[in-house]
Image (cartoon, rainbow, N blue to C red):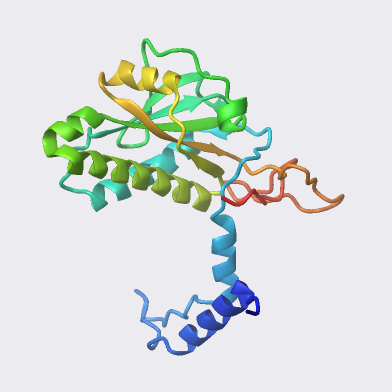
Length: 245
């Protein structure tokens, strides 16, 4: 059976789909909005949606991270309007975040950060988190979910936690960050979550930072550095290529 290059197949699909689209919509000022579909744009989106396990030395700016989280949390609440907002807890493990001393922080509905009192020391990020400058820990009360809706409550909580983490990841990518979802639960993260809301368990994590060179790769001399979250090129940054999930 001959092998087929998936890029050729998907590119052909995008080109055929674009030719069959309805007439362009009219924008708010009465100007026709041109179709945005193109094979190149699609591959750029798909290429960006890959796990990043290599970060450069730049710190994450707290205000930029807060804006990312505010947008992701707002979207998540709109997707699940009937679920209690306190069902899931999000903590930030700040290792190298400009504007925040290293430590554990709660993430509020507006993306704001509050220091967690009584939290344990941060775990060493090198092994579980690829030395990422910022890590989000997502937790939930599994026992409470089971009491409310038996096994369906357990499954519902896990699905929503995964969707929230994935939404934060995609929103961060759109803002110029990179990261990787991690399903490993850590005792230190559960202890930090328990300090905020007793009974909460660590479910999964999301590492975040600025893309660095992939392991075994270096930027070619004279090559351009990628743009950071603010749009400006960052010296010393990698090319953003990351290990595939």
